[in-house]
Image (cartoon, rainbow over all chains, first blue to last red):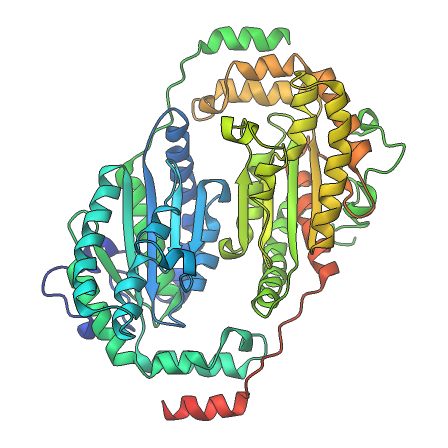
Length: 283
Length: 283
């Protein structure tokens, strides 16, 4: 028997392409991975170091003028596991090469600007991996469901997002856009768990059930956002997330593949190594 | 034989008190820890989860109005291991509760303000652990050694720093100020290693040897800064750092003790749990 492992790349299996139907995704599936939970956890732990070394190379490249960066955009319904991705995947990355931002309800100042204004302020610097907990996509998700703006504005925003992301890609940022996808029953079980366990109760607020009541409208808003903003240069990946362990290794693998694709190299140095060794000897 | 472990707290053993003499510290010692490298690495790995849970409680507390935070200030001579602390200690903390900032050579804009201006902009929000790679202490270290300002200005800055930190403490931020301390021979060996290994060469630049030539003056500047700014509410800890594994568990332990001292609790909730369970059942 062979060791459980990736048999196909999530970047191929989970991509949103024309004709994609969110409702057809099996949220409990584990595409491309041949093992179960235990094997998945082993893969997660074993892969941190490789991700880290590639990130360090990306950072090193930036020290000598490289402009490349990576930006993970995480979107999901409540309880789908964004927090776990940060705690178990992103936490492995050296924090000095990492910039994380959680987008909350917009402040009055943020609302006084274009919806992309606050996002532009949080983009990763060269050499960094950025990670967004929610993002500019809220402005076509909750904004659509809650009718915060006119439908025509939402339609316009899809194009604004495509243009914005094309601009990011052109300036050296590789986007990894991930929707963690659970089904409504799984959310119910997870909310019940939050209510059951005293150390989880603070994560729940009654407004979560108001949002839950709008589940079908959110699914529709996601479907439209995914189809309208998944491009060749900045595709969306929909990660089945009923099994937390799978969602974690899938996101980790997407980051790993992205970094491998960038193939950052240790920079050549512009000083004379032997001359510096001689100076050091005398010091 | 008992399991290697902490036999006394680093917060007690490593504190800078009146009469402290930096030159008398044995940089290769491992105060308070009964084991060696292997035992230290096991402690490091085993303690991440406890630190994380305490950090999550601190964060949870802030969600219901708590104002407390922790700020690790890391200072050290070049190669002393700050990067390793970020990669092996801080990286264990969930990045959504963490704010990291590396202070570089001040920009013209930063120089146009008071030296504390740029530091105030990077303070941790309530519920966060902040970590500074270098800090406002550069303004009494390199500033003294390189004579960037008049001596009287340096003297004044000690008091400004004490006042600033007292203000932070009063507003709910617990400071953990750490100097990683290596000796000059250890630095020489580590610089030689950077020159030897191609994947490390980008970390070296010839200016590092100019700084090294000023070693005694830096030691003097550290001695003065430590003595003048170690207070009861915001003490300095000098961590022997020739053994990287020891420095890492010592800093981790200082953070752990700090968080335990804060003793953050899961917040009580202000909704009726049973009523929400009933609502969820119907959803």
